[in-house]
Image 1: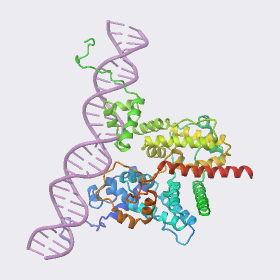
Image 2: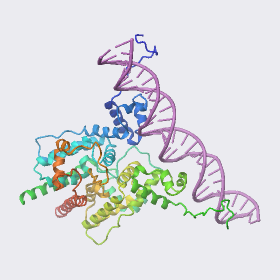
Image 3: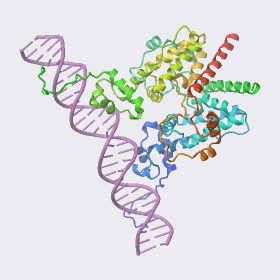
Amino acid sequence: MVETSTQADAPAQPRTPLSRERILGTAVALADEGGVDALSMRRIAQALGVVPMALYKHVANKNELLDGMIDVVVGEIDPPAGHADWKTAVRRRVLSARRMLLRHPWAPGVIESRTKARATPTPAVMEYLDSMIGIFRSGGFPIDLVHHAMHVMGSRLLGFSQELFEDTPGREPDPDAMPPEEMAARYPHITALARAVAHDPESVVGSGCDDQFEFEFALDLTLDGLERLRLRLRDTP
Amino acid sequence: MVETSTQADAPAQPRTPLSRERILGTAVALADEGGVDALSMRRIAQALGVVPMALYKHVANKNELLDGMIDVVVGEIDPPAGHADWKTAVRRRVLSARRMLLRHPWAPGVIESRTKARATPTPAVMEYLDSMIGIFRSGGFPIDLVHHAMHVMGSRLLGFSQELFEDTPGREPDPDAMPPEEMAARYPHITALARAVAHDPESVVGSGCDDQFEFEFALDLTLDGLERLRLRLRDTP
DNA sequence: ACCATAGGTGTACGCCGTACACCCGTCAAG
DNA sequence: CTTGACGGGTGTACGGCGTACACCTATGGT
């Protein structure tokens, strides 16, 4: 009854005001749970109890919002460790990036598409790449080898190495899925591999594969290769 | 004047009838020139001189159309060479895939998103992966090592290793692009690397980098690593 | 007491994918 | 020769999208 507002009996929750941070936060949350396709300005606004156009007072447009979301999640990657040899430093950083990406599976696609559209990655990504180069440099890598190294790391640098057979447990058994016999007949090598990996001969692709182990295996292989190169270059200038 | 049609003087170009192949072909062409965002059912129909809904008599919906486009472009990858050691066989195939992807830059994104949505890659991709495994197998790789190998190849298997700094020559000099000084201040390592790569000290990121060489360098590094592993496993069972 | 301004609202436009009813030319069966 | 089913192109319409633009209102400096 204190305020002279027209609506007398509205409890009038102060409704914490909008802000770029709040918008980006709920956008990331929505994308985390529904995928990036389920993300629309209208839905974000609804989740915030606000009208869609209100968002535009804080973000220029949807693309700019996606850029902001990238910066948010890339900011979650652990900072470089310091006082550690280059290999463990890179390893830690990349594995931290991978953990972030497991939390935000939409991120690789958004990063890639936005980078393509902007010609330059978003600032947070730039910073991440920059510090990664820094680790190599202070590990004694000559600059050209760092250049090669960044290319070798490739998609692993931002953690995503498109697992073509992802293990999505919660998925109803597609009625017109291929029966195992036909699967084995058409794709004998895939089937053989899948059976060899999963000891259970019933299961087909994507069941008994330890993604984490595979990721680290591939990562360590390239890292060892790079280290060998580095030593060879150092001993025979 | 022969036909009793109501429209007497229409030249009545027989207008080659629609077909799934024709639709997929123009869809691929449109995506090639305008990117996948510029691809809409309405635009495809327009390019074919037909009403949008006509397409649905030949493709179930847009997702099914995207699947078809994937199969078209994956079908452009050269078939396995035969009678060649595993390393050159893999090398040829992957480089052929890369050439295809340079023709169809939208493909990686579509393949990835469709694979995620379908849980199993499209048939053409399956076939590609299967034959790739076959090459490793007949090269003497034990099955578990093939499993690792497929993971190590990772994104390179389908050619795309998201080049974060892509060289897009035709792009107007963004009015609010970062000036070189600020660039160098904020991202010293990136700038140093870029300058070392491009002999011309004026150019910044993404100018003097031979993508093809980098791609082959990374590819050969992982291949050599795999071969070493293979030999070690063979000599010490 | 005033009014500029920041921030939330409402309406509207043009695009998208696609459901559904329709219509017409072809062709096999009667 | 008639008929009727059917494959394939059409027209209309719906709901959702991003967002331009005009508007309203509470706040705070003068």
